[in-house]
Length: 315
Image (cartoon, rainbow, N blue to C red; front, side, top):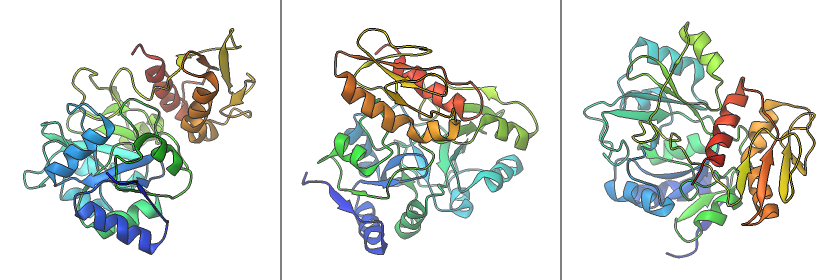
């Protein structure tokens, strides 16, 4: 493939990106969470291209991105509960796993052959403009090689996928910085992946606690593999200081070579997580180690810790 195009965050960039996706090509684009690798969700060849570009296992489902609730209802089956949650949190960093409509026209590769489908309405203005211009559901996992650190800037995408995809829209740094929360509503409400919407907010909206869900051996949604979001260097968690040969990532009172947030702000830490992880990986080198200070297991801290545990898992 030719070199990956860099598209500006303007009307001409949106139009070019939409033309490429409608032609079956792959385009990375910014969302408020991370950059997504977009392809036409109704085109088997385009979706197969997403898996090939990322080196992603085909049993791992993809998220379908649409511009609004009306488009989402043409893909998934919404009951009152799902519609109320969507109205409360969309557009935004929330993915709903719902029964798929029989006439949705989604490639079975997107859902890994399951009867459910993961749907999101992103809030980023460039993403929404692109989705409106494409006029079709867009399948979009994170725009990075499978299992590696997710991209929150256009240069992160180029680092991992240069020459494997047609283009990337440069929309600057992502504001949220961790992937969407995934809420399973194809059965009892279940938290399938912590993310940009704290589970506590969803529980308040639903009026009861969420069950835990997900199976790393047979994922029903993205982000459930045991080892994921991994840098080249080994990762140690819960560190209050660096051991020999480690790069220490601080948080709050724990100072480090780098810090997710010196003030202990979880929003700041989530937005910085993947960029800091990439920086630390470069500093540590292939034989080094990265140590992370403890992160509170509350609010966005649950999403941060989820990503860190998967980054530290045996590979």
